[in-house]
Each structure stands twice: as structure tokens, then as C-alpha cells.
Length: 171
Figure 1 (cartoon, rainbow, N blue to C red):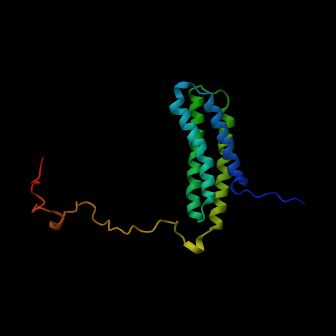
Figure 2 (figure 1 turned 90 degrees about the vertical axis):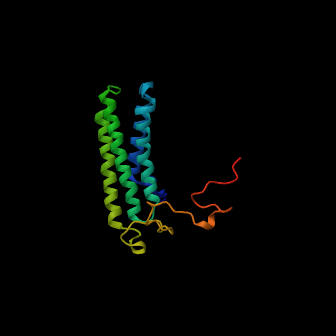
């Protein structure tokens, strides 16, 4: 018996549905009028692309809280794509597609929400890193008082200059 090859995020149902949303977004974008090229077309393509890319990126993260952050962004991108579909329908750029587009986006959201629930339950990385999301190390610089400008010391001046004196060797 031949075993199915595991491909990671590509096997996720929510990713497959996000790809369908992506294809629908690009299909609609290719039919929009040229005056929408740098507005609705661009926004629709970026939102549709973002959903699939954020699912993939979240899958590549180790700590579950870090992964969830990307899945939440993907969820927002799917909603943004749906909003673009609604706007296209409102402007009568598309006819009769909204019902299917809405169902596609809602299916992708349901699937993604289910996967988010699963990831939350697994809590991968919790033992190693605890309950908090993975963060960069604290800055080695003292940032306590950033409101005042540091004043130079007298050792930084040469030729008997003080902080308030004018340079003597002007051209």
C-alpha cells in the first residue's frame, strides 16, 4: 500500500480553501476596469494572497502562540477579501458571483477557525517556552529616558570650544 506523502501546510484544508479564495480574487481582479488597477484590484489581490501566505507562515512557526498570530491575520485577510467581493458586487463589476464568493470565504473561515481551535488545544512549544509568545530579547540599551537629548561632555570638544561656542576655523 502506498502511503500519501505529507507536505505540511499544503495538506491543511484551510490552506486549500485559502488557495481557492486566492484564485477567485485574482479571477475577479483580472476583470475589473482599468481605473481600479491601483485601488480595488491591488487591494483584492493583496488580501487574497495574504490569507494563504499567513497560513503557511503560521504553520512554519514553532510556538503555538506565534502560529496563532499568523492564523488570526489570515482570518482578517479572508474577511478583507470578502469585503472586496462585496464592493465589486456593489459597484456592479460582477454579476451573480457574490453568493458563491461569500460561501467560499465562509467555508475558508470555518476551516481556519477549526484549525485554530486544534492548534490552541495542542499548545506546541508551551513546555519549552511557557505561556507567553516567543519574543526577542530585551534591548541591551537603556531606554528609560528618551525624552531628553544627551548633552556632550567637554572632552568631546577640541580647540578650547565649549558646547555653546562658535567654531574658530570657519572658511
